[in-house]
Length: 194
Image 1 (spheres, helix red, strand yellow):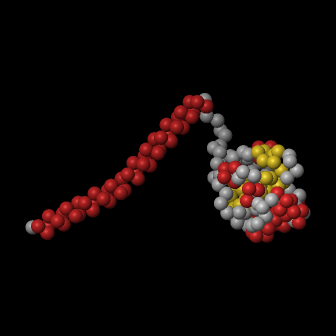
Image 2 (image 1 turned 45 degrees about the vertical axis):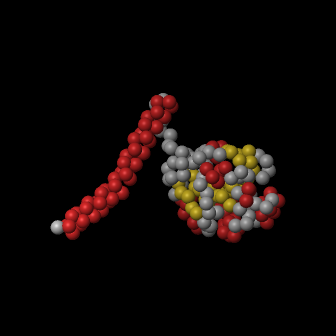
Image 3 (image 1 turned 60 degrees about the vertical axis):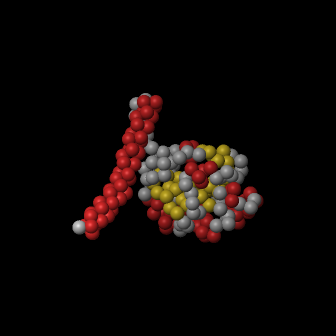
């Protein structure tokens, strides 16, 4: 009889542990959904009637986060200036061998296709700005080279590996994000999806 009592108690404790382990997760999701719903309601009240503009983010179909950076020549450039054009944003650095490998294909892509390339250099990771200028000269790059000196844009775009490319359609919406080096054919394939 004593054995049965111990078995019942252990089984009950085991069942309670499983219930307790599974249930808080469901509650957390439910609480997050309620909070998110309340935040959206508050936001909708503050902003007024809903519009058809997509949410900003990095998922397919979301509006690409806008940014403003300086080109190597000192001119300021904003992503929103390119609305109405197909855009490839490429995050890169001179010390990155895969970045070096894809640059000739990026230049060919820029020359042959109707696409604007914004090559965002992770300037804060470079030894000097001179290294970037020498790199651009070595590869005879004609597309826009932007300086992300404080890594704000790389952070906003959640860039971890370089190179990473983000393809944006004419309406400013993200269509794909490619991590790693790309060749010309891969770039063409992404362009067709815009």
